[in-house]
Length: 177
Image 1 (cartoon, rainbow, N blue to C red):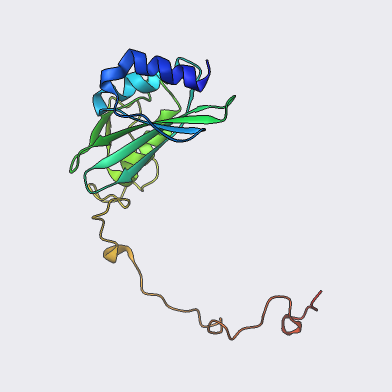
Image 2: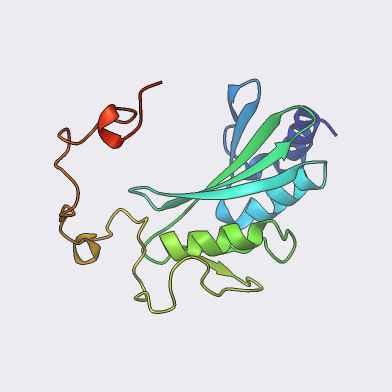
């Protein structure tokens, strides 16, 4: 089914559950959905020929925005289902049980932004080390990088910036071509 027909079908099936559909251009459309209806909306699009390409998370002042990118490759069109989950303890129903493509993306968002995906089939950490402190999410706006930064120390065997040999110069033993 073409993306435009899938979007029309979604609008008819879930009309009151959707926010205002916004076309960014002829190949990108955004569909805002309440968190409780994301599974239904994404499932509807996938059931009509779309493929879940990935999921992205963005920490905003109001919560964590989740974007589910459903692609329709035959038309080179992407329908993005958008939702917002509230901080400080954002939760979202997992799609990984129904859509294996959601597995790693949800685990990544869990590690980096702290969104808990309920009923996820494999909620282990994916990116952060097991020793990483609980409740510390490096992609959150309130993340304090101070304890994780080391002061810059230039290496002794490197000349200061702008004072070393230039690439391709005779100084390196090679000839400019």
